[in-house]
Image (tube, rainbow, N blue to C red; front, side):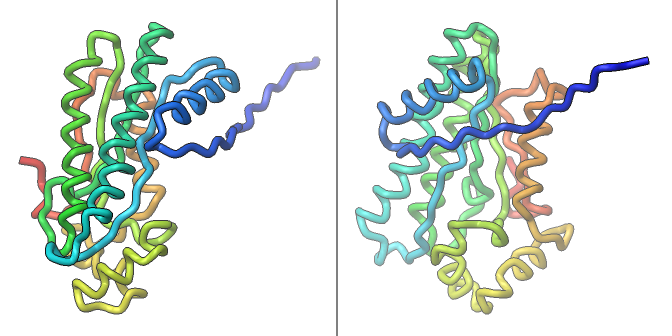
Length: 221
């Protein structure tokens, strides 16, 4: 007796794109569609952060963070909607926002405001794209220190200074202020994306899922 065994291997196609460049984003979507036959899931995950007090925050600091996160996610979602509407098969757009979209912390005005912009984009686009079968949801993580380019690029040192803890202890500090006393890792955020898009929550749109081990001050209300 013989039988055929099919194996599936995850395939990724790297495409470098500036999320503030609408033409570059359109090119990236074309490459993805050519490689995979279409686009049915888009995750807005580009980000950076600069931690400064209000009076030290420059216009350049404000513009950079809003360009990458608020404008960037808008442009990516705009192109995603165009592609998904043309396919007429629905789809998912996910925003990796932040607990800072609802929790006000010190020395964080530009980043927090940009994340709040992203959070409301989720609601606005869910309302607009629902009739096309396109679901738009968000994820609000707490600080993801391990494996984070943002924290490694200076944000970790800045936030550690704000809270008065050594930078190498920042992840532990974040964990201890949560209800579950656990540190948020990249795989926890990825699991939330999977939960929202794998099919069991097919009637869910306009939702923000906290992935913060329980930060009571950031409870949605």
